[in-house]
Image 1: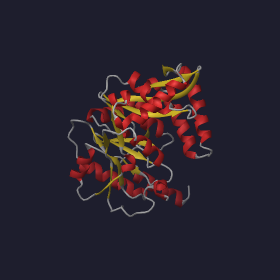
Image 2 (image 1 turned 90 degrees about the vertical axis):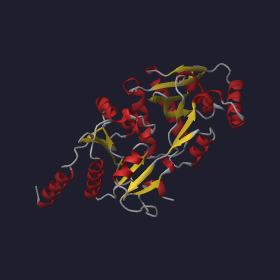
Image 3 (image 1 turned 90 degrees about the horizontal axis):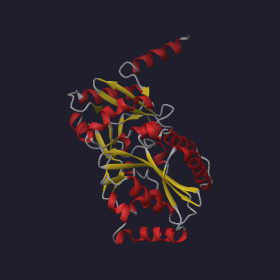
Image 4 (image 1 turned 180 degrees about the horizontal axis):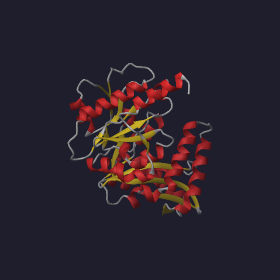
Length: 331
């Protein structure tokens, strides 16, 4: 081992002396949820299923220290960042120290220290522990929350267009069938995903990664506590969706794909899933729009009852910084 390699090993050991990060694997579900669930947070990011299916290949890792859970995120094109540290519920911890440890870790990596997707109650905890940190709203990550009853009935003038889409679907495909998703449908779901991707007429790493995440979710529905639904027309699967019970009063929808050539298919799978799988909840969380204009327009068209606001905390004012969002601010 040459001198450069020796120094690199020393630096790596120094960086890892505070935290020992590990991959987010299925066998860690109970551990991670022992930190996240008791807080009753409505933020989609804190779903273990989200961490598992999107955090593969080291993109998301966790560490425990002094009764605090740390989640580190390392996505291509975005500097390494953390979520707000998550203490064990009901256990007294030195939260300021936890935040400072995370900041020091990011500094040693050469990354601008940032905590992203910070929502209640961790917003208040971070602000109280380190009032000197800069705070920015990050609305591209805000979750859309809807009343379950309105998503099913689509009553009211505002949702008139959605009712029209469903009525059109019913007139064209009166013999459609809704089925609860099971493992026998996985290949059909992936075939539908591949067709959906082909219609985008572009190849991208993001689509390939999303495909792997969708496949992971489908293969591990039972272990992850996911419940899905599908629409069939003439025995062909033309739409599917997957979600979970994030909190007793809230269903979180992770994935929704459909063959767009069937007019009204998206409003139909949305309504049928809510009607059949979400009867005992009050609210539906349909996650964020990622700043994608088409997705933002579609989600706003259902008129959310509220948004789960999320913020970024940082050691410097990054409101004018270039590159801190990676691909998010290429334009």
